[in-house]
Length: 142
Image (cartoon, rainbow, N blue to C red):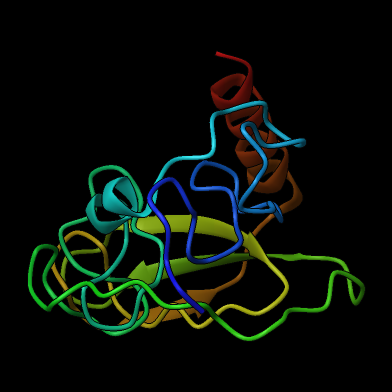
């Protein structure tokens, strides 16, 4: 597939991760603009192309330091939009103690985004899930 300027190579919104067609100017889920792949290189791992979150210094999937690797956009395989509900998971770094919560169907995060250390999945309470959802909604609406 030939990459064009303004095309999101992942077929996913850069902000909320929702499905997005490359011709869409805005995401139907969060309303943010469909950023071009040049901007994607700033928010994706140069090694495995996983999405990086604001403030991450290491990739949560492969542990690569942010800025390392050669980001080369490519089209991922087709993903099914149907399936099980996303699951809330809490991760804790063995080395620095940093914790974070994710809400994904498949969670491959193994490394701390702060120090690059190994991260374990730990139990998440219903109160933590509610707080996470509240913060996420505030972030999306701001």
